[in-house]
Figure 1 (cartoon, rainbow, N blue to C red):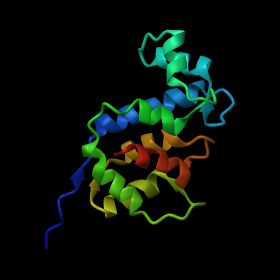
Figure 2 (cartoon, rainbow, N blue to C red):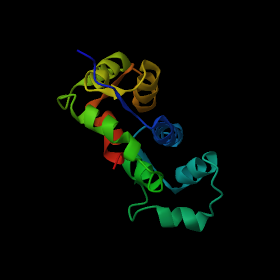
Figure 3 (spheres, one colour):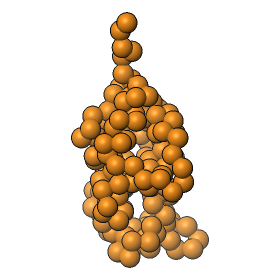
Length: 151
């Protein structure tokens, strides 16, 4: 009996999302998951955008703060993310509880068991980018930030 062919994942799109998340985390000075206009200007510059103060203010919401989820959505709108659909389905299929955490190895094992072709190194990059507290694992909440940005 032959094994089913794993479903490929668009690693370039995934890497773009991870880069956006890493840039946000680098400028979120108090690690609260929110950035202000000054921090947003720094992030945009680090991503290669030359934005004016007025443009930055336009991007901010009424409360003057921008969440990581909002920032990821804002920076992935033009991406073709259909190649990440299998990863989204696999992550949703991991059946994790709200307080669970997942290591790169567990994520890799889970997505592979669900038929997604994603390397252990890719899983390490996902966990590394999402690991806000440096414990080597990603919470369900953190992992869902990627899932929610995948269409």
